[in-house]
Image (tube, rainbow, N blue to C red; front, side):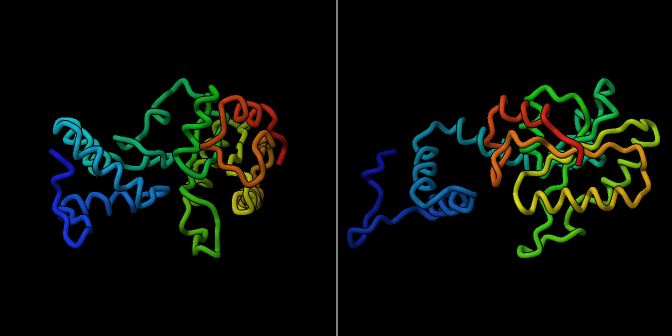
Length: 216
């Protein structure tokens, strides 16, 4: 299709409704501005139909086939994610992360334990409270794992932000009240900059942060 041939009216480009809608959808994504949204839309306009269909099918599959693991709340295509189904994972290590992207980042370091995904952090200013996170299921899992492994270590790997720190402190407080006397609670080490986000950290930095974790 010749893009120069797109209709113009009063020197303003008049786009087909379907293309305008695609641009709007791209622009609604985090980090995508108007110009980038337009470039992406025109990229698919110029691409072959098979590539566009494949992209649409992938989006449809993510929307319809993915769910949250009933155990750790990681994204999964079945009731239990691949990590929770892996019997070779260490059952005496449980790493608490904010979101699946953080899980992926830590997994790249070679960590071999289990995870629990909170899907956020406590942030009263944005209306995120205790009931908005998977905290109840975390307590249940910790008690269950602790019963089987008295030497269980809980790694609090929330991001080193004010909200991440507050969430880690809250988790520590509620677990202490559960009377799990031998439970080891550690905080991810300071290999990460304060205010940083784990999904943008390199493997070496994350590995050092995990190795340098301290009693919390």
